[in-house]
Amino acid sequence: MRILVGQGSCGIATGARKTSTALVKQLHEKGLDQVEVDITGCVGTCFLEPIVDVYDDGGNLEARYVKVQPDKVATIIERHIIGGEPVLEYTIADVDNDFIDKQMKIVLRNCGIINPEKIDEYIASGGYEATRKVLTQMTQEEVIEEIKISGLRGRGGAGFPTWFKWNAARINQADDKYMVCNADEGDPGAFMDRSVLEGDPHSVIEGMIIGGYAMGATEGVIYVRAEYPLAIARLEKAMEQAREKGFLGKNIMGSGYSFDMRIKAGAGAFVCGEETALIASLEGERGMPRLKPPFPAQKGFWQKPTNINNVETFANVPWIIQNGGAAFGAMGTEQSKGTKVFALAGKIKKGGLVEVPMGLPLRDVIFGIGGGTKNDKAFKAVQMGGPSGGCIPAELIDTTVDYESITKTGAIVGSGGMIVMDETTCMVDMARYFLDFTRKESCGKCNYCRIGTKRMLEILERITKGEGKDGDIELLEELASKVKDGSMCGLGQTAPNPVLTTIRYFRNEYEDHIYNKKCTAKACSALLTFTITDACTGCTLCARKCPVNCISGKVKELHVIDQERCIKCGKCEEVCRFNAVNRE
Image 1: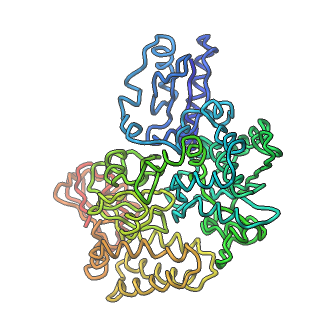
Image 2 (image 1 turned 45 degrees about the horizontal axis):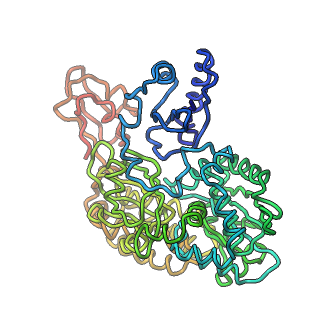
Image 3 (image 1 turned 180 degrees about the horizontal axis):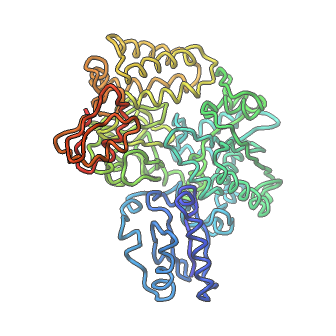
């Protein structure tokens, strides 16, 4: 019997290591040292962590336990490990199995199943067979053709055909070429790349070896943000094991092809997600984009032909080579093939990672898999594409998830973040939040990006404070157009998207803020008024908890809020047990 404890960042954050320690200790106390306790990555159900899987001696999953804190361990051991009967009330089947059953996993095929720190488990799942096939049976052109047949597009945001980038780097002759993995995942609410690197690092390494062979690269670099220490540690271990097995280094598998790789930890600059800024950072320079052409495939890292793809793109490659490009291309839509990983976050019941075929309606992802909004509040919008994307409103919930359809809404698929918003979300404040992010992350090279985003942010801040004025909406639209047209790289060109989409679909909220001095969602504190209704019982709790002592009233009598002293913190509403505080 074998027990796996999910120890991705999400699992560890909820106490998985303590759960694992409790399992080892109690199994030892009961003389069950023959039961192996091991680790695995995140299976995607982050909202159910810590997760514990129990496998029989034949490797079959007997039970998946969820939200397993140390106090549940004794029951699982007594009833299941010793008694042979799963504790059904602790299992995922009792909580929610649809989250997993409705997905189609290619990128996440091994996450939550294998130990990411043991290469033998990856090999046992078919790992590195694609590398063997490529190096012993296929030419560079044949590998690129297979990727072309698959229709795989870059999963980092732009959706550019992967085969085209590989081929462009292949045909440019040079003594050295470089294959680079962009793992600089910086979108708020996005954690797809982190989970793959933590749960299945060998799939990314293998994808890079195959891509490196196809373009003729001899060195690979994984550029991963330093804020991902667990991902970096597991990558380093995986690379060391791959070298020991002969999958990295000189003369791989006796094929005559040599390829090795290293990790570069980035300093967390969002702009380094742009490929030319990433290259500058790799070279030890400040991460700032440069004009194209020349493209990286011509002159990239150290002025040599360079290809850059993201984590998810590379993780698809071994599966495609093993199963054939046509099998991958059979999934999805005509223009958007295969599957896509999304990170569900925000006001959603079941936050986590999902992998679904391209072409699935947003409704199926948010409601069918994600369970809808928390507390069943009215769904309002979903933010896709992070700071570079836009907000898709409730009326477009049946939009299919593919590059073309999402782009028509004004958003983008991006790297895969989906931030769900409900009726309590102020769309003006949401636009302000994302623009504040991109303004801070601008490298400052372009005037329009550096100054234009600052001016737009100032307008949005005024509006959310109730200081908006006639013409502000039109001025935002004018500035947005100039920032998009005048910026050199994707950060500046897409920074106005959250503003433009919220104006497009939620213009009434902007107008309410400006002309009526009201926040439709009752979220902007400067525009709120808290009053106490006749439902007040005079319990005095609100007065005792008020941080500025602006609430007065005698015991068992109606209390009153001094509006001039009220700081709109909402503490009175939060603590009232009789729903006697009104927010307007």
